[in-house]
Amino acid sequence: MDYTSRQIEIINAATELINQGGIQQLTTKALAEKMGFSEPAIYRHFKNKTDILSSVLNYFGMGLKTKMTELIQSEDKGIEKLKQIIDFQFEHFSNHPAIVMVIFAETSFQYEEKLSSAVHNILTNKKERVISIIQQGQKDGSIRSDVDPNQLASVFMGSMRFTILQWRLNSYRDDLVKEGTLLWNVIIKLLKESN
Amino acid sequence: MDYTSRQIEIINAATELINQGGIQQLTTKALAEKMGFSEPAIYRHFKNKTDILSSVLNYFGMGLKTKMTELIQSEDKGIEKLKQIIDFQFEHFSNHPAIVMVIFAETSFQYEEKLSSAVHNILTNKKERVISIIQQGQKDGSIRSDVDPNQLASVFMGSMRFTILQWRLNSYRDDLVKEGTLLWNVIIKLLKESN
DNA sequence: TACTGTAGTTAGTATTTACTAACAAAGGTA
DNA sequence: TACCTTTGTTAGTAAATACTAACTACAGTA
Image 1 (tube, chains in turn purple, cyan, red, brown):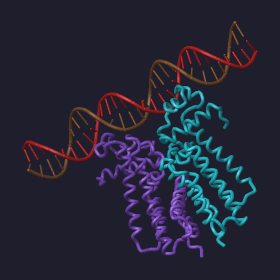
Image 2 (tube, chains in turn orange, yellow, purple, cyan):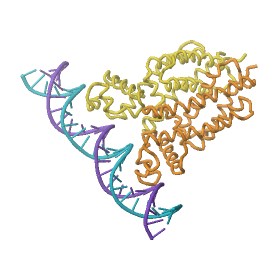
Image 3 (cartoon, rainbow over the protein chains, first blue to last red):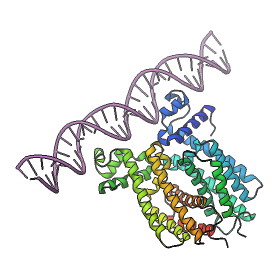
């Protein structure tokens, strides 16, 4: 699970290629070109193409997990933590647009069991953490408790993803961080205790 | 924009292939096999592969548009219409799982300008209709009016998509219609006028 | 100095892919 | 009957793709 610096360079190059034109654009040729060396050199660092893709997913998943763990361990109220998730994600994607495609590539990874389950794990893991934050918020009174945490997590994560998707389909033309703020203004109204 | 019956058969076969293994699995060979005839026969019905993909998108978009128009024209209150959208979509996907991949394939269509803009159009069109339903609901008092319709539409559509995505990543194991009901129970609480 | 492992190179290959050329059967119509 | 259009066939091709073999430059170390 540790990567050499060269591997990380390749992971980043692959991520960018996926971002530019979907998985279809991630060819050994394009990757080698982007790295500025020959195709066979890639195979000094990764076993095969699936290995590269699975590393892209794993590397992304690791970063996300670390951040989420940090968040959960803080002393803030539940609703505050949700706000921090939005802030972190939108700023992160804003600065690293290439990563966006990876989270929307679920369908593209379908063809390989190993990859599709990696995607599934990342999403499930994140959702579980969001659910536990919501449950905490319902206990500490910062989140309305008349709704199912599981469904609320779907609403929360779905809204975020949808906003990011629109930004992506709009060729990154909007200011994503601003969009995040607008979304938050609505989320907070929907989630806070109604009395 | 009219398709022959043979073209529709091919569109459906292509949709199923995409569903099974993403766009990567949609090859002329696999498509011909599924249709039970030879590869070149495909080219009697479609100019090229892009033409097939763009027809898949267009055919899907047409169906969606028709249904949405029906909904909008009814006499129901805004919130009722949203309920009908959820019911329609979840039941539709439940019965035709193959279509699911198409709506999650935004990223895969990226590589061709013509296709990616088709996807963008479908999504934008649908969102605009949802927004206008929400605005109507805010006027007729069935939807809370202290939130921005645009953002609310993102929350609504995002939640639906996310629920469907989970179902898909979970290999269609859940009962999607039931998931739709659970989601609706939350949505209605979040959206109704708070007093 | 000799040796060894790392990370590159060039050249090449089997397979897959989208697509074309040329032909054929069959049905409708002049 | 003759002919045209439609929709299929077989055979084939150029290009792309993932990957391998064999060689090399070089840095670190015994």
